[in-house]
Image 1 (cartoon, one colour):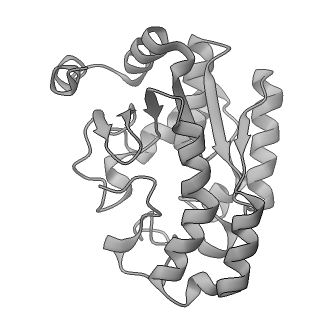
Image 2 (image 1 turned 180 degrees about the vertical axis):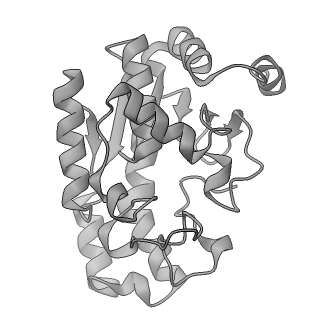
Length: 231
């Protein structure tokens, strides 16, 4: 796989063209990992229009907002699918609680990354293990840690080709698509949550603030990744 050539080929391609290539080329060896946020809902709609049996999964950390489960249910019902769900390992969660309590993630970056490791990283590794292509809803405008991400890259951490079809989309592009296509979305977006993760680590932001400022708000911006999209 020539990553450089793919980025050249897709330089002027739209998100649908990019998705069509990887879904038709790799079938169920390509998958969208969905957080059920706005960008991933756009991709879910696009992908299922290409292939009703496409591979889409999500991670249930055990600490999600009720509204996130609502949009999961609405998505399953609208498209007639059952998104695959990966959960953290029971023993690992019990050990995490014993070592740092229920909210120890607030106490240090190390603790917070331990929590992300157990609840997100390990389940994601299991989900990606049989795959060749990982499709994400990353956008360059979301974070200072994402500004240089290309459309296609090789993820050394997980050993997969990583595809970011919406990397050049604006927030306006995302919401226009959702409205025009009647895509189910998380109602927390209407309450000032542009980026939604686990309930204890996500809060609404003021208009004009950085869209990721509500995630792990007690940390510096350069630390605000859980490890799923580490550079």
